[in-house]
Amino acid sequence: MIYDLIIIGGGPAGITAGIYAARKKLKTLLITKEWGGQVTKATEIGNWPGAKTISGNDLIKQISEHLKMFEIEIKEGKEVIDVDKKDDIFTVRDNDQAYEAKTVIIATGKIPRTLNIPGEEEFKGKGVSFCATCDAPMFKNKNVAVIGGGNAGFATATDLIKYAQKIYILEFFPEMKGDPLTKEKLAQTGKVEFIVNVAVKEIKGTKFVESLTYEDRNTSKDHKIKVEGVFISIGTMAKAGFAEKLVELNKIGEIVIDKDNYTKTPGLFAAGDISDIKYEQIVIAAGEGAKAVLAATDYLKNKQ
Amino acid sequence: MVKVYSTPTCPYCVTLKNFLKEHNIQFEDIDVSQNELAQKEMIEKSGQYGVPVVDIDGQIIVGFDQDKIKKLLKIE
Image (cartoon, rainbow over all chains, first blue to last red; front, side, top):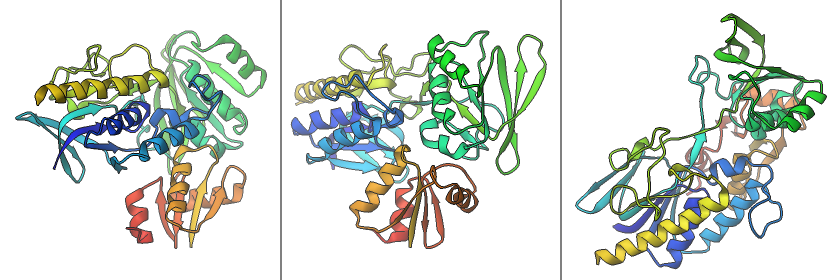
């Protein structure tokens, strides 16, 4: 069977695209590794119209339930590994199946940026974490390091305050970039040590994380701190390699689109944080998902 | 016997528990943020810190691995 549209991604852009596609009566398949992505890690959202404050989990629950009201095919827990096009038909592959469609919308969002240092991958889940909201309670009375002194790092440290005994916040640049007011609040707890101008070099341990080594960028000297947790909060990155044959990527790996969400390949669209739009907000991603479906609908009409 | 080790805030835990409820699977819901003993037990069983962890009759699954869970619970 050939779908009218395959949507890749289950965050606000993908879900909204699904709702629009269903209402346009497009024969649609939505493939997603997970629901919500980055949104689910937000403890409190205060700028989603209609909900005064809502948790990321609840918001995604609401909009994904809205989507599932419609007759739309969904493959959950599947990661797309390749998108190709031949004779006007796209083939989208996950690990075990291939699907065909006339149009495709990529809305896979962004994932946490990694440090790419020894020990990071090895100790993932064994002390290395990218989600304090998820893992903070596991570090009760332990010493932990937060990598990244921006607002994301400060939010991570704030999540950890309730549990950890001591928190080191490490920043590459000579100054913490996060909000000074938050910094003051963190400092007042007496639990936080701020370390600036350092490059994190290695995470070590046996079964679990035991220490972290960083280089002081002033003196080029290495230092080792004993920590059982390393929380990496250095922003996000786009990972669109699965579509590289068909799209242009900018220097930070985002898919280049025009104002109507077209990529360089006709019939292939991108929406939300995976695209090169400037502002990354939930409400914007949702809007971009809607736009992409409207553009895809026009594209399908013109093809007929 | 199905045990779910989780924390209240972790997104996959919520998804996992909803999934089990949807399929009428009874499970013991263990909040490791409140129960340090259970937390230790979970870390020992799974060899890692991440939640959720599911224990299905002694078989340990880390994360919301839908395929594995379906297989072990014989969910279509």
